[in-house]
Length: 626
Image 1: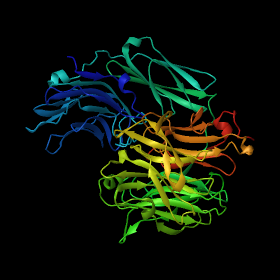
Image 2: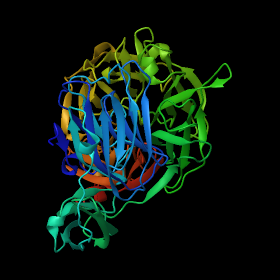
Image 3: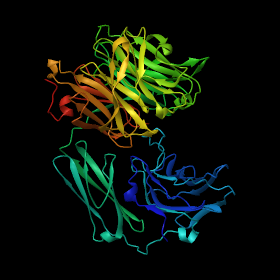
Image 4: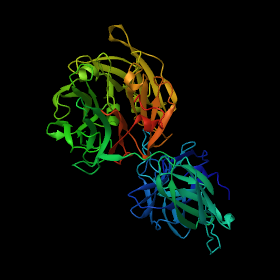
C-alpha cells in the first residue's frame, strides 16, 4: 500500500526549534487519510502535532489526543481519545471520508459522521508537523517537539479513504531488546563526536541525540559543536523498527569552547505584578547606570494582551543586580487601562545635559486590528533629567511624526534610538499605509534637534516589507538602517540594510535596500550599536559596529553577537552569547567598556542581561585598544 506522499524523521527533523512544513499533492477528491508514528516526551497544556491548512488539526491536550476537522461552512468536528502515556511511540491514523475516524495503535478508535458539505482541500494544501508558528514567523510556543518534547516519524498521506485494516500499524514479532552503548570523543575545540555501539544495528530505525545544551541530532554517528565549556549529559534514544526504544545517558566534559557568560535575570515573568515581560531596550545613563526598559504585560505574554505598561529597572553595578520595577508610562482612557508598547530610549551624550528621552506607543487595539483600520495608534514622548530616577513631561507627538489619516500601524525603533554627532536624536520608524498588512510596512526616519521639544520627519524608505529597524550613524554621516524584512508577506530570512542620507532642507534620500547574506534572521527584531570610530585613538583607531540577533534560519534560538570593522559591509567576527531560546534584544556599551546585551530568553522566558569584553568576542584578537 503506497502512500501518495510520506516523510520520515530524517526529513522532518527533531522539531526542537522549528516546525516542518511541506506541500501535499493535489487531492483528487475530498477523501484522504493520514497516518504517522509519534512519541511525546512531556505533557504540556497544548501540543499541536500535525495540521493541514484549514482542514485538520491533531494535538495533545490535558491527557487527550484530539483530532479536529473543519468542514466547509460547518462547525468544527472534534474527536477525542485518552492519549497513551508519554515516553513511548504510538501510531495514529486519521481517515476522512463518509466519517471522520481517529485511531491509536490500531486498537482504540472513535468516529463521527461528516456532513454532506465536504472538508475543504485547496489544490496542494500545506502539511505542518510540530505545532504552532505565529504568522509573523519565528514564534514557536504551543508546540509538539519544542525542547525535545516529542518526535514524529513515518508520516503518510493518502489521496483516498483507507479502511481501518489498511490504516493499522505493522508490528514486529521480536520480544527482546538489543543492547546499545554510547562512545564519545572530545577534541580541543569544543567538538564532541558521539557514536552508537550495538551488536544488532539492523534492528534499529533511528538514533536520536539530546546533547544537553538545548540542541539535538539524528544518526548512528554524529558530531556536535558546543558553544561553551562545561559538563553536559548526552542522552541517546535508540528506536527500533517496531518503534520500541532504548535510552541511555553519557556524561561529557567540554573544553576548548568559550567560557560561559554570566546571565542575570532582570524582568522575571510572573513577578512584581506582571504575567510576562517582553520587548527590551536599554541605555547607559550619564552617571554610568544602566536603565533597562520592557513591556510589563499584565495578563499574558500575548502581543494582544489587554493591559501593558512601560516599565524600567536600574543597575548601578554594570548589570550584576537590578532595582525593583518602576512604572514609566500607562495608558488610561475613561477610567480603563489599555496598552503602552514599543519603548525607544536615547540619552544625550553630545550636548552635555544627560537628558533621557523615551518614545512609546499608546493604543487601545492590537497592531493586527490597527492594520485593518480599527482604532488609532498614538506616539508619546517622556523625559528624565535625573538618570531615569523620575519621569516627566509626557507629550503626544503624533501630529509631528505620524500621519494618522494615511497610516495605521506606526511605531518607533524597538530598542535604543540614536544620537548623531550633531546632537540630533534620530528614530527609525515603521508604518503601514492604507490597507497594507503588518508584513507590508515601511521604514522612515524622524528626529528632534532640541532634545525632544519639537520633532520632524523625512520621507519613507521606498522598499515595502521592512519593520522593526535599528539605526547607527556611519563615519561619513549617513544613517544605516538594519531591518526585519518580509517579501510577498513572507519572512526573507536575512536582515535588510538601507542607507539613509540627510540632504538640504532636512530631506532624507535612501540608497536601494539590500539583504545581507551574513545576517540570518528568523523574523525577529535585532540590535545594532557603534562601539568605536576610527577617530578614537583610545580604542585603537578602529571603526567597530556590533550586531546581535538569534542566528537561526527559522527559529528564535542561538543569540549571536557579530562585529564589523568596515561600517557594516562585512561581519567577520561572531560568537554565540546564548545557544538557547532568544528573541528580541538590545545592545549597550557599559561605562567600563564592556558590551552588554539585554535579551528575551525566548518569547515567554522573561528578560535577562549579560555582558562581555571585546577580547572575549574576538578570542583575544582585539582588546579595543587597551
